[in-house]
Image (tube, rainbow, N blue to C red; front, side, top):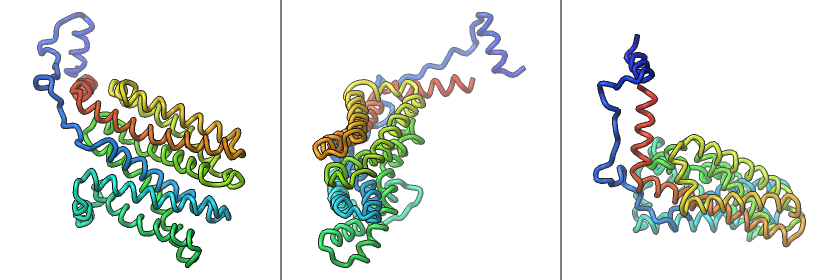
Length: 314
């Protein structure tokens, strides 16, 4: 009989274990890990804007191929503006522009930060070329090639920040390392669909309305799966500032998708639903960011999962 089986029999008979159950406490109640020093407006904004840019390039390529020129041009310009603002937010958080350039001195495939820096460095110029060609009408072949290149890089740009956050020791992020990139992908698709609904004419927005519906369904499903995986750490996704933001995100995303599906053929309804989808995506990114900070600052979200893992092995 194994030691684990003997210990289980003693517990069932009401016997006391020789070795007391391990208790996990932090030193004077201090946080076990250091919370990220990232500023919410910079990094959560960087998460949101990068998602909007990357997913927008994918939808722009689809609009370009199907002759929806007004929507394609609007999304190309939106993606360029978003990635520019995203890079500005990252550089502002870093403190010095030279620090971003220094990250490009290393190419490390196992580092999400390194790969993300190179992704932004490659994506920005092709997104700019695609937007410039669409606005000026010059070099259509070059513009088409740039549009395709931006669409190929777009999914990685939209989701790598999820991998970056999950690669940390922050419980509310690392605990859902499998789900977080998919949640960011759904959120980015909702944002890009919203931008297409706001900036494009109703006659061209049928694909965006379909994408919005799929994004809302995926967002709800992945969010539920993430909360189930986290156990008690899911409290950080339901309570406080993070909980309020994530609840707002669910309402805005679902409401925007339903409104777009039912009334998106009308200009006013299309704009309203698009704005709701954009706001819902932003709330998702800021809510996930807030949940991560809350889980890092409270030691119980680090020590209790350790206790649960120990109990599973004894």
